Length: 471
Image (cartoon, rainbow, N blue to C red; front, side):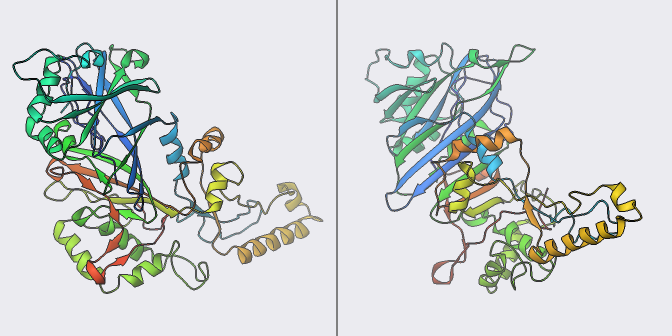
């Protein structure tokens, strides 16, 4: 289940709308400003054990000396520090591959086939240090500190609140200015969720020329039992002005998606349809598309028209090669960014035991322009180069799948080993949430089309750039 993470930066910031800060509620100190320009989340889900893990790394910018995050979970979480570059390496691992074909730069003429490819913040006045003791009140507030500790460089407290107004006062008595409303807190209190509060020390972060701070919080993993894969989205509503973007990586035994009108199928199915007929025959052994795309189009043949019509009614029109735009309500459809059932070969790549990508052979190897132009050697050289090209094209009619990343970042993929599991499906999707789409928490569900007995499961993969892919 998608961990309900409410990153609540405790500090009253004049919050500017973040570019991407999924499921986070902010708290900020008076006269201080902090914003969260982005956030990435990694979720894992074990449906048999009903266990969810959630890792988040938000960015922040502002002038607060210290602040905190508030993360609600349906049960008491176990906290663990994650590698600093965890999300950077996830991005490297999930770079879409593109098809390249061997080309000669010495041959007078050469058609390279497909060429280069189809290619509520609350302000932390004096920090979270004073969260321990309570100011005496006529009625003892029903707030309990269940656990305190340190994970990485972050101090944390796990608290339980019996009443929303008590939690509100608990924050206020410690000089927090809650910029949300008690109703939102009550939403989680009534569900008997717990709250993890984490202190952030900006003095360890980069300082801008104007004296403000900028940085990324060390990734922290929360593990907890849950009946559903759920992500705390409602609390995020307090931290945004009009919209917020979230990038999800979800690892589960099946491909995942968002439910109802939030599905990425409004974009994914048309993308596959528009890519048909763009590849040379024989590349995929009788199929037209990579990643079981043909199978998915076939499986949805009877259900697809109604789904695509609903997409049009919502204003989610797909334009090949372009990123989706907002409809009249300001809603932007979810997009699938990458998806694959992880194999033993993928795990070897993470461990540095296999190549990050294929290498395109050079048909000109061993020859120079002088060799080709030589009256005696030229004919033989060109003949050898052409023979190599014919061999490459016969052996690999679909070309070679390549992707690029700095060598040190490829070596850094080892931080993912042990976290990404063979046999699990890793799904990466992006959603920009308008404020009116955040009235409840977010469920992550198995990817499918249809309901009940007529529903069909989506097992298609998206590992390489399609001719219809957006930039």
